Amino acid sequence: CLFDKPAFTNLIVNGMVLASDGKKMSKRLKNYPAPELVLGDYGADALRMYLINSPVVRAESLKFKEEGVKGVIRDIMIPWYNAFRFMIQNAGRWQDASPGRLFKPDQGKAKSSRNVVDIWVMAELQSLVAFVHTEMKAYRLYTVMPRLVSFLDQLTKWYVRLNRERLKGSDGDDEAFVGLSVLYEVLVTMTS
Image 1 (tube, rainbow, N blue to C red):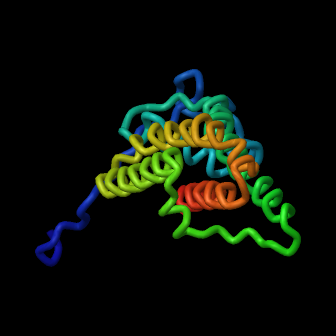
Image 2 (image 1 turned 180 degrees about the vertical axis):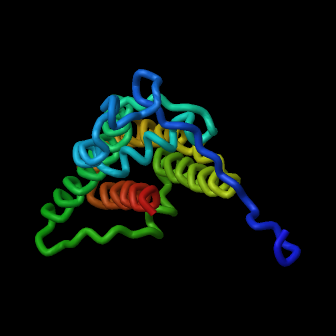
């Protein structure tokens, strides 16, 4: 101990990232996809999510497969993007219903909504945020992705599906505004 203090308080050990055949990645064997191509095709976020959700963060070996990164795009990035796009399209529809009206999400209305599904999704969101903070403080990165995937699945397959007509204005402009504010709040909180 230098200066009567340990050199570090936490230590993170990662496992080995191997080629898909289970051998060590080798330039000579060319048994792995070029990193710049993977980043160019799928993006850094998808690669990061793939690695965080892999055994490598538990100090185990990972047989790197490009299909795994593609799966992150399919299972996480595209549904997330589609929920955002749905919210933007319906916010535009809400604005167009009354000339000169501008959609400015209202966090207060989102949090005080009386709609049962709104209350449920906001509670799930707060539960997710608390879980992520707890797990990140404990350096358990690998537990975050399954919970995030589950939440996104609930958001896109349940919240958006159950509220599709409401968000389009079938229950009136006020209900559409509250629902869109809730969806906006959820999406913004997830990205921060």
